[in-house]
Image (cartoon, rainbow, N blue to C red; front, side, top):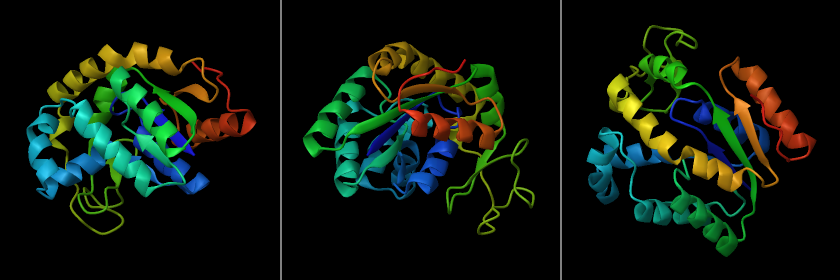
Amino acid sequence: MLIVLLGPPGAGKGTYAKKLEEALGIPHISTGDLLRLEVASKTELGKKIEKTLTNGELVSDEIMADYIEKILKENPNGVILDGYPRNMKQAKKLDELSLKLKINLDYVINCDIDDEVIIERLKNRVVCPTCGRVYNLISSPPKRDKVCDNDGTPLVHREDDNEDVVRHRLEIYRKNYSEILNYYRNRPGFLTVNTDGEIDAVFKSILERINWSGTSQEEK
């Protein structure tokens, strides 16, 4: 089983991917988080992509293709992909990999939200560098000021969450957004969900639509 979550940075892909992981029992793979871990760990891959990530650019298609193939091979029962594909070349490569590895692409969930809402969200987003838990200082703050509820680690604001970088990331994403959606739009299992809402209500909607038929009924 393979589920892809599409949507711009800050649309809530990670939040709903984690909830799907708990509900469906297959791992959530955040390509962005894993790549940032490579940078923090100073691996060879991390050294190659550090400047790219800091500037809000996308890692090359070739590097991502190798990385995704490795992830899929390590998870033959399926994964929830958050952050891949981001362009048409990646989308077509994912089809090739799913066919090669015999992992069916069951659902493509498009998380839709206004750019200005995203910018406001990310300005207030902080993360735990130890466990990766994400907080929003306005809508979902930690119990103690800027300290992780799970392990007490001081929370940090990611370098690529500053407004200028976020706007640049959104510009890159929107440049590829329409073509990718059109590529998936008429497939069984494609659905668009407006994620500018209460988290549990949005997630309930996703589960209902997946369990209902797996066909597309777009929400605006």
